[in-house]
Length: 182
Image 1: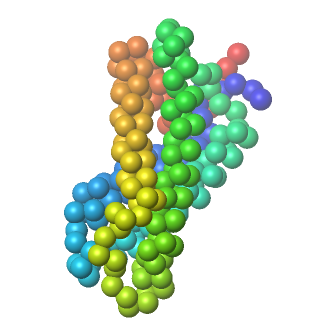
Image 2: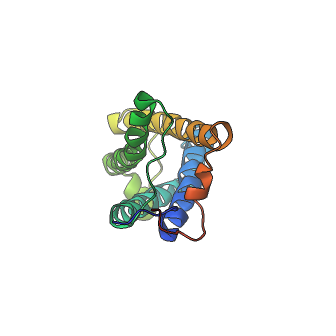
């Protein structure tokens, strides 16, 4: 595959859309859904949004992975420190793994607790008094914390590249002419 100066426009679109969706899902989960009592009738609507968002994130991540593997991409960004450079692919592919595991944990919790029927099937049943009895729910929470740490690491690394190293990293993941690199 030829080397280009920027990522494919669809990949760029998915990157930024997924960034918004993932941060939104984490924020909704941590700061709105978890603190809200399960007896609050508004929680079912918020869970529907959170769960549908999680499924959408999974589908978009799968599409993004396929596009990333099948399109030309820029040369790997380097820091000049080989040990640091080895972390980049771990975090990038780690996002894919975390999304799959988080959706699996959420889906498992939904099925085990009956949330899928309550939220999407509109069974009329109340939410369970607590979800903390399900190991998959606890795993979902721990994975969310790991995802937040990955996002922070990704953001710090991108800002370091852009403003400390001055290598114009943001340009690669934005729209514009992709010109071949020789």
